Each structure stands twice: as structure tokens, then as C-alpha cells.
Image (cartoon, rainbow, N blue to C red; front, top):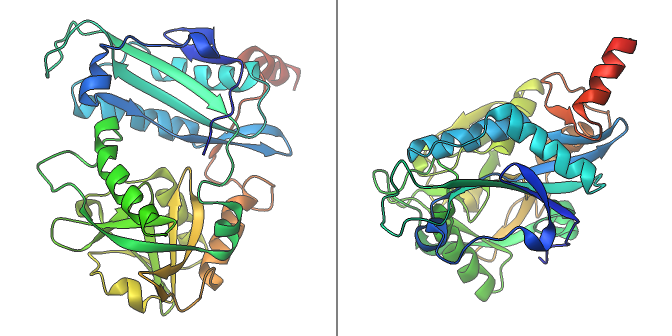
Length: 321
């Protein structure tokens, strides 16, 4: 899916024209995958552009970097405001934000020293449904990949790090080469892990199942969102190891992720899921999720961060009240 360029990218403390936000060819992250990033959706709500779970995403960015001993040169508030600035200065209403921290130019050894330069950038641009609007409504066809997800004790799956996504590249490219929209990876034990870039949920007999953190998954922010929305509806969500055959017995299956949002699965390995796309529970969760951005679902968790105005404007409004 092509990127639609906007005017500015925030990089290393300042806004830069889109085409001038560049890095050196010898940047450490380019050679060794030492980057840490987030994907954040901004939705056009009745009260203006709102970033979804912005602070949670930026906190995870710090956590991912910390796992690798990388200290970011900015604090959380600075990066939260950088995200808001990118939205405002680019005149965005609906957007996908990509904050990224990475080891830049200066060292070529595998293990960067404490003196290695860490750079941080935030880009923002319009982006539609990751797996297609039709897929979001009617479901997508997927397959189980021959590629396994990383084993515990190899690469930490809890970090949203650039190098981790080489696994997802293999899973997704194999699936697409076989005519599927996306692939599902199994873990080292042959149990269900996650999609190439999405968490996975199965519905069977009214209960919702999802693989646990120990299944080499990234513990997604949207995954957590869905679990909380389901609980609010009185639906039971069970985290447990799931064998591959669970995919063939499920009443409903759906992906979650910032990019994928909530996307139903129509078939796995050519076998139709019983709901043949979006089932009753998937539809309910989609309704509650997207309702957060229309006002239909109350934001009782304070997940929306309005980013269409500056902090000064918000402060002035608060004083006026």
C-alpha cells in the first residue's frame, strides 16, 4: 500500500520537510534492525482528530527500546506532543502515525555502545484499511505459513523492534504468493502464534480465545482494547495455547492490530470459517470499537487523545471554562 506524502516529518526535535527527513546509509538500524517503532491511528471524531491510545503506544515504544538497552533522548511528553504536532501541521484528520527510534550513524559493530547516536522521528499520513475495506466488512482469506515465529530465548517478541518483522515479511510474502491476503505463523511448538503483523482471536461456542504472551506474540494495544471491550459486553476472553486445528473448528476468527483494526477471517487454508466472514461477536466488537470514534461507544477508558489543537489552545479552553 503506497504512502501518501504529507508536508512534514518530526525528526530529532524539529519538523522537517518530508523529503529532507533522511538518514545515513551507514545507520546502525539499517544494517542490524535496531529500530523500535509504533503504529498509531488518528480518527476523525465529532470533537476533532483523536489519536487512539497515544500514551499507551509511546509507553510501549520506551519499553521496546529498554529491552535492548536503548535510552531514548526525549521524554514521553515530548514524543506525545510530537505526534500531535505532526497531525496539526500536516492538516490531518484521519491518519496513521509512525513514531520510530533507531540507532543512527556512528558505529558499525553489532552491539552499539552507550555513545551510539539514537535518533527519533514521527511521520504521519493518510492510510485506509490495511487488509482492504471489503476485507474489514466481509473477511479475508488466510493460510498457515510454513515459517515459524521466533522461539523464546532468541528474539524478544515483546519488543516492537524492526528486526522482529523479518519473520512477518516471510509469513506475509509466502501467503500472498499463494493467493491469500495474509498468513498466520505458528510458534516453535507448532501452536498458533499470530498473523504476520496482527494478533489473532477465535470464537467458539460464545467464548473468545487468543494465544497467550508466551506464544511469541506482540501483546498488541488493539488486542488489549478488544479484550476490554469484550469484557464490558460480558463476553469471556480466554488466553491459552491453541493448536492449529482450532482454526478449522472456530465459529469466528478475526485479526486485530493498529493497521488491521478488527478484520474478520473468512477462510483458513481454503477451509471456510463457520461464520463465513464476519460473525455476530466480531460484528459486535467492530461496532463497539469504531463506535469509540463516532461517540456511540463511551470512552470510559480515556483512550482518545485529541490532537487537532495545540497544548496552548487546550490550556486556554480549560481556563475559559
